[in-house]
Length: 220
Image (cartoon, rainbow, N blue to C red; front, side, top):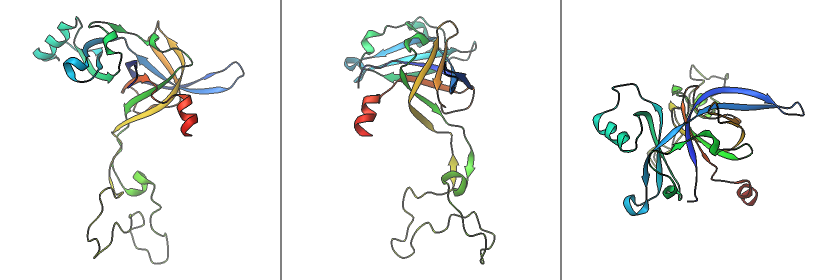
């Protein structure tokens, strides 16, 4: 895995900005960082290389004694969120180091990881886009049912992975290759072109893109 960089932040919402030629660009506003490095994992000690970041100061008394000791060893205050990301350049980080939004510059591309909005229990039409049954010709009150889910005698079971009703949303989602439109170091704000997963106020991780434009050209 190549050397990567990343930062934690809070999704504030979406807006639009206008280019010099008066074109509207939809952007997501992210309050990113500052984050503190609370642990550096190396191949020698942990079997892989990664960096653990702490974000958003926790309320007093919310951290357990072991976690207080963990933060104290890094010279950091207890935080609400601890997230690690893998990078081959972990050795270049140090305990207590502060990561700010200026690690990303306009024109770069980044991946955003978040948790999608939870929709609760949903049927197949809403969850998977099923067409449903006919609206006429003898269909009784089951227009939104999924229809058959498997054969009878052979194989006498429902295959794993069959699309059915169930929990919708509230799962980890990664959006790739979003362009960094603006990076405001004074206000710790990132503007990314397009939408990112999760509700306003949700935690997101912005990391360097794993698929560059050249990769898209080769495999596109």
